[in-house]
Image 1: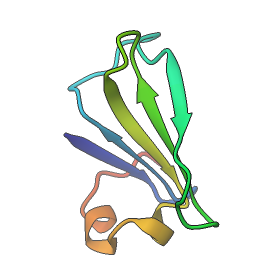
Image 2: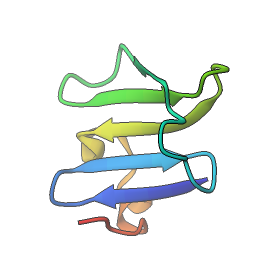
Image 3: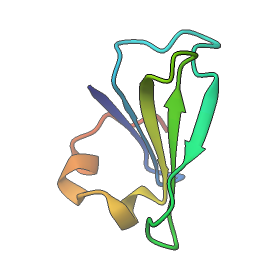
Length: 74
């Protein structure tokens, strides 16, 4: 598992594979029931396996210590 955090845009990405190849994520599924100020999307491959999770508004729904320790992409 790998976590990256874009501090400027408050967006986190949690990947479950070492590298997601271009075009491997063929479907995104929105997760309902998350805080109103945040969006969570699941990235799935063609077989329905979860490759990663994108979290927009990450500070609203993820622990600060997780984000503070994550490498920054901004």
